[in-house]
Length: 322
Image (tube, rainbow, N blue to C red; front, side, top):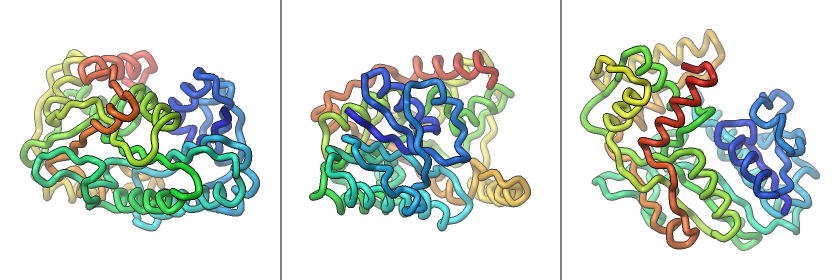
């Protein structure tokens, strides 16, 4: 089977390419000329060059593939325009090209996010029938991408994957917490925060299973619900440190985000902390139910939080990140 992967150079995308190659897929990666290829350059995968945000660059590139895994997008930005260009327009461009040029396409798989669904308001895990209510530009842009994909439902089969927080080797977002904790600091804000989470290897297994035998929308998590304190304490245990706990008022988070955005204007690097991310961080319940995936995809997470945190900490240490 021939598979095209966008976002192949990123954290999740590079793991997906690696596993598809191991499974015997003929894999092609759609990358930008400026992309850092370090995670995929030694894999048996072909490279083609284009930009999902510029439809003309995609002409002729999506033909002949049986599966398209669309992972390209951004998780952090400093304007709604960037979120919607990368996550919504980029999705619209590639799926429209596929509809126009690829009669061989069996399935289009779109990596969305729990953020597209939004948080639970009452502690009941979100499921595929829950009414979406994203609280951030990121979530709204991913939901817009979902809506574009769903409009092609009669053209070819579609799959939408909504993972919660994803962690594991190569990740740089949750790595921020590992780095702080290694330095002896744990940060909390407001009251308790509850979250679902998934280790990257399990997410990849779920994505491929959904591509092979699923259709529609799926949440994928490790099946647990954790507090933010649970996660940070497990990171501290894995690193063998006893950090000092700092509780920050929510209004101070927004001030910190303003400073981070100002720093971006100097460095040009999108900050991990910005006002849109704070809108997500102050929500109480980022939790989801993956029972549909368990039933329809035979999805069984293998790496639960203790093991996943240990594996991730070991990878960061072995690769000089910690």
